[in-house]
Length: 213
Image (cartoon, rainbow, N blue to C red; front, side):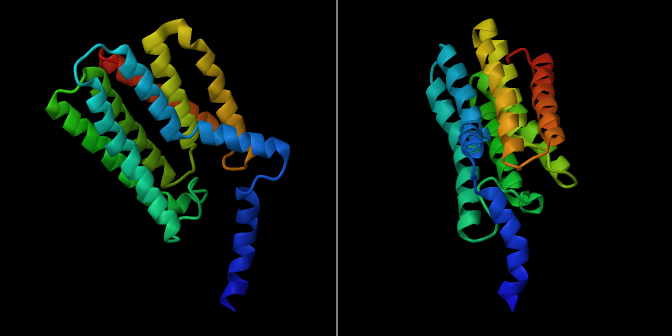
């Protein structure tokens, strides 16, 4: 009886979550490569490598553990215990817990780095990340914005800021990731565009407020 009630809700979601066509499989791998943890780690490694400061990689480890690893482990735990459907957290109402842990991770990493005297660029990145995820959380309470395109746009603007035109090819990743999210039916075009505006806006604002970025 209970299974009969659940199946009409589960079947459409399972159909969305599983790629079927060649285009959907391509979109799936683009989406995985362009996920927020991957894009964030890319920016962190590239920027840390450009810094000639002592203990920079130690602080990278602190950042990665608190802002990326702990939230990811929590999300995996949620999936394994049936609290969320998948690692993409397709259902908006399931995103609250993982978003709160992500915000806490970024906030804690910023605090530790600020107090510990980490390189200003990395500290500013942690602070900007915390603000970005706070805004995503607030929007998600009412609407499903794309965290993928938010992260991709923010990372792209930040890397362009640090490396200039040498990083221009990275700009292509933003529309590609947006396409993948729409193709996989994870988001509408409007949700991906909103993410691009949010990610770009947060980093531009952080740059204007903090010359370290």
